[in-house]
Image (cartoon, rainbow, N blue to C red; front, top):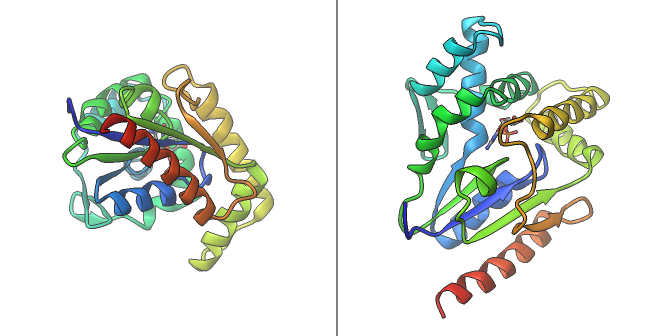
Length: 224
Ligand code: C5P
């Protein structure tokens, strides 16, 4: 991993960090890691196995042996394409519960770091800049108000033909923010050195332009 440049994009659910990180990775021709998808797949496995959140040993063992692969934008669980299945709010909540277990985070650490490959990595999540890749060259922390994030999610889910209720979605987003920000291990916080962007009143293009401006300036400082 040493010497491989990393850009981290952290922030709460629905801030647009996934779209931003993916676009940065495509623009630079770098690898992309959607760390939330890992926690979501684990959430799906726990849900399917009907295990309660208290079975920490069992869940940690599952995390250490996840038959998970990313293949051309698809998320595969033991070969099954679960890309869409893991995007529901139920699985998002389940993911946030398993993500609060320290042993689970520990088990997934080395796995995530393996994604730092040449020519570079763009990693999106909650603790990419603080815990997983603290040495990252550029750290971005993207936020937006809970109402705006709920609106965006509402639109996305509706476009997919999924039935959703905006008020419930807003409550769920707040609940997930609260759990992610208050957990003892790797909580959702901006790294001191993160470039903070509030996307509430910005289009994705504006967010992208600002982020790229920052990235180009930081990378050219590194390689004059
Ligand atoms: O980013 P996304 O909404 O897909 O993440 C789902 C859940 O996984 C989050 O609510 C969070 O609890 C957890 N997560 C995490 N650390 C990461 C990425 C996601 O704890 N790096």
